[in-house]
Length: 339
Ligand SMILES: *[C@@H]1O[C@H](CO)[C@@H](O)[C@H](O)[C@H]1NC(C)=O
Ligand SMILES: *[C@@H]1O[C@H](CO)[C@@H](O)[C@H](O)[C@H]1NC(C)=O
Ligand SMILES: *[C@@H]1O[C@H](CO)[C@@H](O)[C@H](O)[C@H]1NC(C)=O
Ligand SMILES: *[C@@H]1O[C@H](CO)[C@@H](O)[C@H](O)[C@H]1NC(C)=O
Ligand SMILES: *[C@@H]1O[C@H](CO)[C@@H](O)[C@H](O)[C@H]1NC(C)=O
Ligand SMILES: *[C@@H]1O[C@H](CO)[C@@H](O)[C@H](O)[C@H]1NC(C)=O
Picture 1 (cartoon, rainbow, N blue to C red):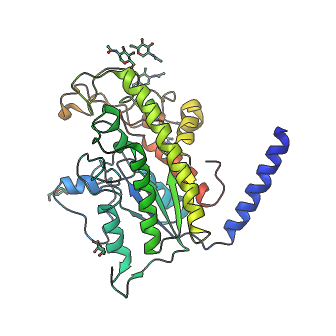
Picture 2: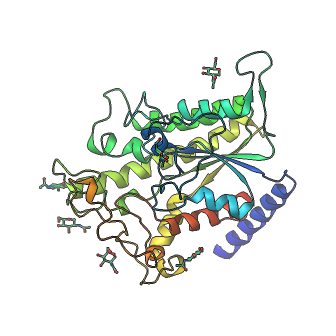
Picture 3: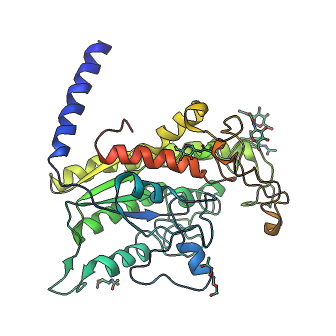
C-alpha cells in the first residue's frame, strides 16, 4: 500500500516537474516579510533614511542583518542567478491595522507600496502597467512571526476584535492584491517552529526581546506551538483556495518552512558546519544582561564557530540556516523540493 502510494506520488511529482519546465525561466524574486528576510530596510529607517525607489542596500558590510551576516535572499540570488527585490522590514507584521508592533512598513500596505513604486508604471490610471514579466518573477511572502509573537497573540495583547483568521486572511489578501497588479507566480512560506527558539522556549528566563515583566515560559511555549500550527493550517488551506479561485491564471506554492526547520533541528550535523559540534538549541549572539542592549555581543561565539549554530540569537535563525533555506528555496523554484 505504502509502495503503491509512493509510486503514485512519484508519478505526480514527475508530472508537476515537467509542467514547470515549460514555464519561463525565473529571473527576478520579489520578497515581502520581516526580520527573517530583511537585508537592511529596518536599520535604514531607524537610521533616518527611508528607502526610496529602487533601493537595493544589502548588509553587510555597512551593518549586519538580523541573522548576524548576509540574509537568505542574498544566497538565493546567487544560487539561482536571480535579481532580488527585497521589501521585507525587520519588525514588520502583515498589517499594522490588525496586529501593530513597531509601526514599520507592513506587508499589506507599506511594503506593497514599494513594489508599486519600483515595478508599476502609471499606478491607478488607465495606463497602469506592470513592468516585470509575470512569467519570469516569483513573489515570496513570509510573515507572521511578529503577528503572533510578543505584544500580540502569545501575550494575549491582540485587539479585542482581531482573531487568528484575520491574520491569515491578511496574507492571502496581500497575494490577491499582487495578483490584481499582475503578479502570477507566488510562494507562501509557512511559519517556522517558533517554539524551538529561546524566546519561546519552555524557559522563563528573561531575554533581550522580553526582559520584563517576568513571563511563564511553559505557557508561552505551549501557546506558541498552538498559534504556529493554527496559522499554518489556515494559510495552507488558503493556498488551496487561492489556486481554485485563480483557475490556472496564477499559482501559489506552499513552502513548508516549518518542516525544513524541523528537519534541521533533528539532523544538526547534516546542516551545520562551523568549527564546533553542531548546536540547534543554543545561539551564537549573546546579550549577557537582558536589560542592556549595549552589552549584546559580549560572549558571542567565534566567527569560525558561527555556522555550527541553527540560531543567531533568541529569535533569529543563523546565516547558515539561511544558506540552507536559500538552497531549498532554489530547489523549490525548480520544482525539485520536497518542502
Ligand atoms: C547611518 O547614517 C549615518 C549618517 O547618515 C551614515 O554615515 C551611516 O552609514 C548609516 N549607517 C547605515 C548602516 O546605513
Ligand atoms: C497606487 O494607487 C493606489 C490606488 O489609488 C494607491 O492607494 C497607492 O498609494 C498607490 N501607490 C503608490 C506607490 O503610489
Ligand atoms: C518546562 O518547564 C517546567 C518548569 O521549569 C518544567 O517543570 C517542565 O518539565 C518543562 N517541560 C519541558 C517539556 O521541558
Ligand atoms: C505556567 O503555565 C503553565 C501552563 O499554562 C501552568 O501549568 C503553570 O501553573 C504556570 N506557572 C505559574 C508559576 O504560573
Ligand atoms: C558551511 O556550508 C556553507 C554551505 O552551506 C558554506 O558556504 C560555508 O562556508 C560553510 N561554513 C564553514 C565554516 O565551512
Ligand atoms: C549550545 O550552545 C549554547 C550556547 O553557546 C551552549 O550553552 C550549549 O551548551 C551548547 N549545547 C551543546 C549541545 O553543545
